[in-house]
Structure formats: structure tokens, C-alpha cells
Amino acid sequence: MESNARVAELMVRLMSGETLQQADLKKQYNVSLRTCQRDIAYIRRALTEYNVGEIEERPGSYRLARRSEDADLEMVLTTSNILLGSRALNSPELAATLDFLSASLSPAMRALVRKELTLPRGSYLPLSRPKPILHRLREIADCIVENQRIVFAYRSSRVTEPHPLTHHAQPVALFFENYYFYVAMLSQERGGYWLYRLDRIEKIYAKEAGEKLDYAERFSLQDHRQQTYLLDSGSLTQIRFIYRYYLQTVLDHFPGSRVLETRPDGSHLIEAYVKVDGAMFWLLSQGVHLQVVSPPSLVNRMRAELTAARDQYLN
Figure 1: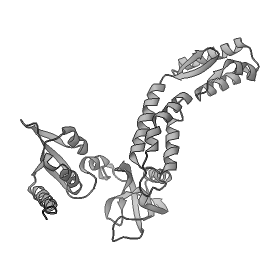
Figure 2 (figure 1 turned 135 degrees about the vertical axis):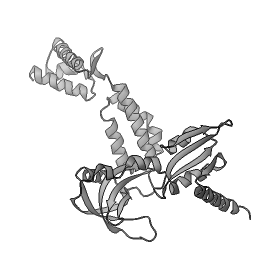
Figure 3 (figure 1 turned 90 degrees about the horizontal axis):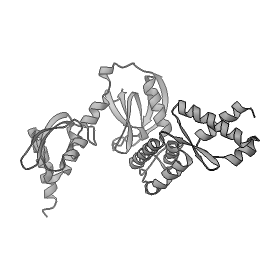
Figure 4 (figure 1 turned 60 degrees about the vertical axis):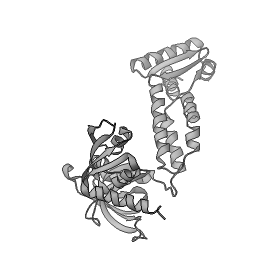
């Protein structure tokens, strides 16, 4: 093998995470120890020039230590744990995705990732009826980029729709939330933007050219995330409430919220703009730690819900 081809092959092997043994190189390529050292020196200069990493030389062996290897490991572990906590994928797709995330790491780092993810992977709980979703995810993402409208069968969670129905809609935004992937679509059947759960799209019958929607009139994912908690339902309402627990909890659940006042007893007066039906779930869950003060309609609604809950335990 010519020297240029040999050096290229050695570089590819190092970049793939292989540890090269001097004795094996001499035998495989039929070269002297001096030639091996010259080849590695050439590769070392090239790696340094492009800031890829450096050759780690130990007695009788060479391996590539990437400059970003520690950072890569941290990102792989972080992303893997988020994915495991999402419950979004079935087991085969989860395994394939986790393997893909760690594929660029060195063998030693991949082994470390496998070890550190042993417990999280072993305790992974997919959804009760998990479906393959990666192909559909890509398909819908392509439709958004290409401004395509689709005709599809959709199985609703509504009791009044026990069978899949045909829908006509243009996907505009794809996002993950509370265990599921959702697609915001401009829906013919719903007369405007509607959120569809990706795993409930059973079949796509056709794709056709859609509209190039004006950006100002598109579905705003930022507004959705600021205004919605668990359920995208109810009118957009400015609410105010006194919160007597950990402040960061409120700010995380309602990203658009702000502190109007911090009181002497340590409680906070909070203002938020929310889709009120979904927000009710969280407001009710806080019990005595939270008191809604406006608007009056929400105060009355909270009072009625909490009174009905209390009355269940009077008998």
C-alpha cells in the first residue's frame, strides 16, 4: 500500500475510535517501526492544524483523544437522559436512537455511556400503547418544509369519534410536549389551527401543494408554550394569584409569568397570560399554597371546583 493511502486509512481508523497497536501496524502494512512513527507524526500535525484532537501515545499503541470528547460525552448523557424521561419512543426506536447518539464517541466513552445509562435504560417505561414514530416524524417535518397539505386518517380521543376520520390539513409546526409529539395544522375540518397528536395519525393518504403561509399569521409555538399548561383549551386570560411556595415552580410552568409583588410573609403575587382550562389543572393542584385573586370569573370557578372536591369527603 502506498504511503498516502496508508496514512489516510490510519487516520480513518483513529477517527472511528480504534486504538492502533504498533506491532499490528508493522505486520499488516509490512513497514518498519520508523515508518509507523513517521506516519503517526504526519497525522498528528494534520489533526493539530484542524484542531480535531491529538494522538495519545502509550507504549506500543496510539489512539485519538478528541479535544471535545468530554463535552461530547456530557451532551450524549444529557440528551440520552432527556430522551429516557420523555417516554416518547417504543423500545426498538429508543435503543436505535441511543446508539446513534453515542456512535461518534470513542469505544471507551461508549462503554462509559452504556454503564452510566444501565439503570435509566432498565427502568424505561414506554407509553401504554407505543407506536413507531420516527418515520412519521420525518415525514411531517418534510411536509412543513415543503409547504404541503396532507389528507390523513386521524383517530381522535373524543368519545364521539370512535373510529378514525379523514382530515385535510397543512402542517405548520412540530413539537414535543407531555410525553407526545404534536403537529399544529391549518385544518379544513376545524376551520383554523388545530393540534393533532402525531401518534394518532394512522395513515397519510395523499400530499399536495399547500399555501406559503404569511409568517405573522402562522401558528405561534412560542405563544403556545407561554400560554398553555397540559391542555390547549379555554380563552386566553390574564390571571393573578398569590403563591406561597417555591417561586421557580411557577416561572417554569408558566414561562410568560412575572412577579408583581413579593410580600412580607414570603409569598408572591404572580401575573400570567394562560389558556385558562389547562391552567386550572395546575392551579387546583397547588391547594393551600395558591390563591387566585383575579379575574372574578376564575375566582368563582376555583371556589366551585374546590367546594365540590371538599363535598365529596363530607359523607
